[in-house]
Length: 273
Image (cartoon, rainbow, N blue to C red; front, side, top):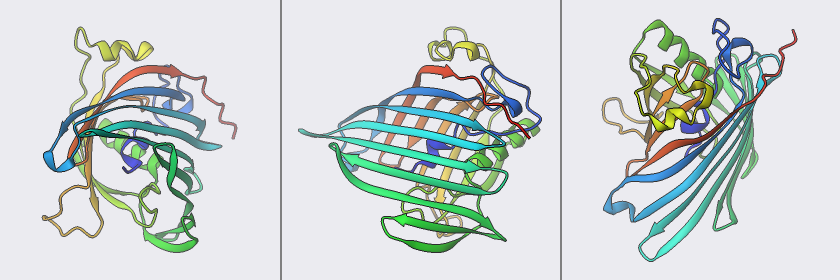
């Protein structure tokens, strides 16, 4: 599974934003969010009969010092009479101002390391210079793309301006770390919380805040125009300070749902110029 879908969701830096609960300068909320995962749908081709899990996302930092994300995605997958435990652990650091991004992702299957990706990327002219350390050393150029925080800057900016559909490109170091993805995003009108929304209540101070319904599809860069199907798509409710809930992750053969179970807002780090 790719990291961008979820890792990008809570990254936000918008200088004109008002300070939201738990947010520092720019409205960026330092926080830890826990999501309960469940299987919403699965095709026969997937071979999946059941899936449950938990996702934990922690975001810290500042516009001056850069942003750090720690992300863990654990699922127990049932396939007939067998089951397996998958555990993806990702840490990233992004310096928005200087256009740098570093990442490490370790994927475990039944508590054994299955795959590791480690590397960094930097804006160089009209491209990204990518240096991979794991699984093997490799230096390459990738077409210009937003890093995850930048990608969400774009999303929030367009949402506030009332733009409902746009296309962009993102590089998040996932898969083999050697390419970017094309994204198409649809942003709905801002909505108020419905009465009796139990998940909203678990958002604590944000329980009564309005949100944007957002859906995003991710495509391979090489997909032919008009013919390529998305590699995956996601939908979620996005708050002003970048926190998300009510996640739906569609990987084609199966669909996962993520419900916010716990939200802890941290004191924002001061941004000293």
